[in-house]
Amino acid sequence: MAVHILDALSREGFEEILAVHDRESGLRAFLALHDTSAGPAFGGIRRFSYASEKSALLDCLRLALSMSHKCALAGVRGGGGKVVILDRPDLDLERAYRHLGARVERMGGRFYTGPDVGTGEEELGWVTATTRYATRTDDLGPGDLAEATCMGTFAGVSAGLRSLYGEEDWAQRTIVVQGLGKAGRGMARLFAERGARVLAADLEADRVQRAVDDLGVERLEPGSEYEVEADVFCPCAMGGVLHDLTIQRLGAKIVAGAANNVLAKARHGDRLHERGILYVPDFVINAGALIRGATFHLDGTPASNEEILGRVGEVAREILCRALEEDAPPARVAVDEAERRLALRRGTASTDEPTRPVTTS
Ligand code: NAI
Image (tube, rainbow, N blue to C red; front, side, top):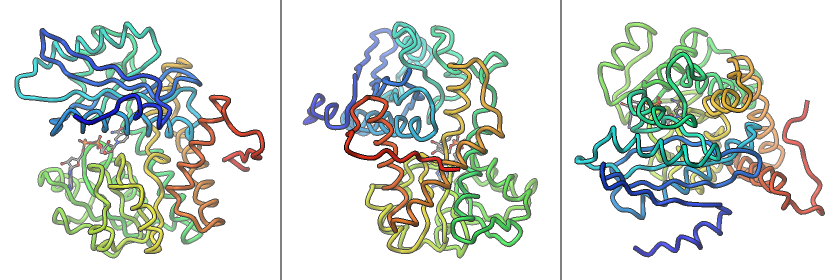
């Protein structure tokens, strides 16, 4: 496996990576800490059948870095971390998650973990049995994280509409939602409640049927959602869905959704910009769960829906405003701003450069 771990860490300023193996459960996992200069690292546990150890490691690093960007832009006093478990059929899940929890506990609060793809309520129950530094899903935890995600994402969609049209005018909007899981269903509900026309696709037909029945959304065949002429394409399923082929087919004027890492490559943010499609970066607007979890762990009180709407909306508006001023792809503006904030936190920012606050009121 030709991965030069130390090179990879130093290139992006990572602090640490642990390779975790447990003989009893068969657990094989990576745990990456990207940045703890402003506070503990936050990041969920992803469990996935990776094709190789290399792809698992790279995913872990990419996700931890993206969490640092998310923290910096959301004003969270912490940085990015991540765990990825290399899933396989003979893994003893309960033991594996308990082992991971114990490992996180030994880090003494440098890293807080929580849900992600492959890690839901049951798995978190095993993790929280062995560590205090993980999100509880019962009454002793921070509350509904998916709802928090939807609040922030909604603020991001609003910012996109205002940037393009000067107003939201929900009743006149057509919105396509991809994925009707925890985040997508919540988004579809928020749009439908405001009178928007909502079309949605999911690989699981019963989820779509439920949304048709309860929320009045219109059904789309999975794969057909890209072409729909819409104001907003709201991706709430998997990452990497926007690439050369799908961007070419995209009929929406704005892309804004909850899904993590929706661009297959960074250059696809440029491609959207060239096509005149406004992309509101995912890591700017899907930070609601992070904000709620971090405020709970650091301050003892989870952020309310209103606080999340306000915080995410403000930063989204600022990023879009700057992108418009500079005629630059919003994803580039957001990454630059996140990196600038990280450098300030680490005390490595150039003093020659004037600092520009991201929030202007
Ligand atoms: P989920 O697992 O509850 O729902 C995902 C849904 O997408 C499922 O219904 C699945 O059938 C559907 N789906 C998968 N591939 C699809 C495709 N190609 N076309 C149409 N539908 C497809 O997941 P959740 O929690 O709703 O998360 C969705 C996205 O939002 C993920 O990328 C996640 O990383 C991101 N996210 C979620 C947060 C949360 O609080 N739930 C927080 C931040 C990001």
